[in-house]
Image (cartoon, rainbow, N blue to C red; front, side):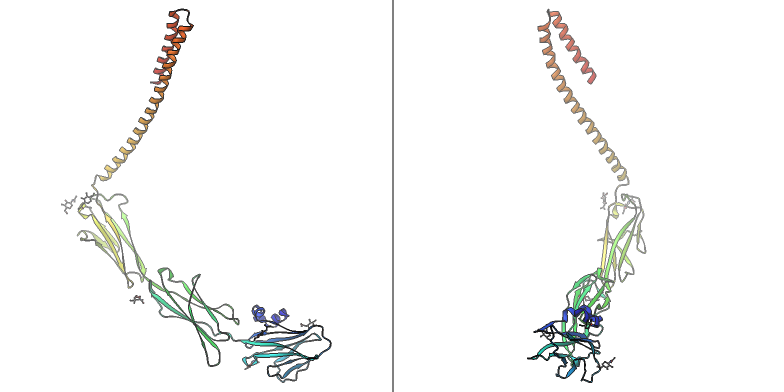
Length: 393
Ligand SMILES: *[C@@H]1O[C@H](CO)[C@@H](O)[C@H](O)[C@H]1NC(C)=O
Ligand SMILES: *[C@@H]1O[C@H](CO)[C@@H](O)[C@H](O)[C@H]1NC(C)=O
Ligand SMILES: *[C@@H]1O[C@H](CO)[C@@H](O)[C@H](O)[C@H]1NC(C)=O
Ligand SMILES: *[C@@H]1O[C@H](CO)[C@@H](O)[C@H](O)[C@H]1NC(C)=O
Ligand SMILES: *[C@@H]1O[C@H](CO)[C@@H](O)[C@H](O)[C@H]1NC(C)=O
Ligand SMILES: *[C@@H]1O[C@H](CO)[C@@H](O)[C@H](O)[C@H]1NC(C)=O
């Protein structure tokens, strides 16, 4: 039966399962119906195991719409869809609010049976209207938006999305003179720079509509972001050299100009400022200090600092020499360490060899037939150790 309803209410198919309810009364059955105004509602009176009893359909005023397959009521919007022993199915086209009410399926059994089909008419809201309190918001300020879904039945619900993030609004429901509902949702949030260009979407949920929404793009002003970029030199700032700094500033609205200042001091008199660039030729130690680029727009002011530290003109070379010394020192340390290790190994080897020498002497003395042979043996051992020593050194 559900599928039959869906078929007759194609627009409404996705909601049908929500709004169709089975009414059980012995063996006579019908369903509640929700229908969008202007569309067609289908009422189905079904009988299980019918014993040829007559079925009729009454309107909420208990007038007979259909008696079997005969329509006594003059309203031609009622049409027979199916009639059999087991079902009386009637379609009501161009449904209006006045058609709402409790329809009655009646079965002429003894005692007679009734089943009720409540027709609920849904009225979709008007197109959602989204409004924002201000067109352009400054970062850090709170903004306020409202979304209105007018004249629906039942009341719609409103959700908000900022980009892909859901935000919580405050809804207010008003009942209009014609018993329709107007829902207004108020959204308040603090904007950030990142919100610039992000859509805020008001989504209206109502059983009679799908994908109902309105959106507005945020326009956010923000104070400049300032960054100093060193054009020259790439390495150390040495006496006598030139320094070139560029100030990059981006904001909304875009700052018209940037200002170069020196903190607690004056910019050297011969410094040249062209647009966003600061050029100081022939650096001198007295120019040491903090150079600041300041940019401002209607939202606020920001700056970036560059700390100048003028090195001796020889400082670079000195530093290079220092690096060389460090490298040489490292190499020397490694070599010395290696030699030390070698000496220790050699020392231990030599000590062991000396031990062997004495043993040999003793052995030689034991084994030899006479003292001479013993001395020769011992000398042989001694010579060996001399050879080793020479080899190692
Ligand atoms: C039909 O709707 C009425 C309210 O209009 C409700 O009381 C009744 O329970 C519904 N029937 C079913 C079967 O849900
Ligand atoms: C009408 O009812 C008969 C018997 O219940 C059924 O076979 C037929 O499919 C129905 N027709 C429609 C259009 O639903
Ligand atoms: C639908 O009903 C309304 C009144 O409720 C009427 O004004 C309109 O002409 C009808 N539309 C059709 C197509 O019958
Ligand atoms: C932002 O808020 C401040 C106060 O917090 C206000 O003075 C300023 O006018 C606001 N800016 C805008 C663009 O509304
Ligand atoms: C640096 O400036 C001081 C005075 O401000 C001057 O006496 C000195 O000669 C300058 N040094 C160089 C290398 O220009
Ligand atoms: C500037 O910095 C250099 C570091 O190289 C230092 O020797 C010099 O005294 C500083 N001069 C001033 C005026 O601070």
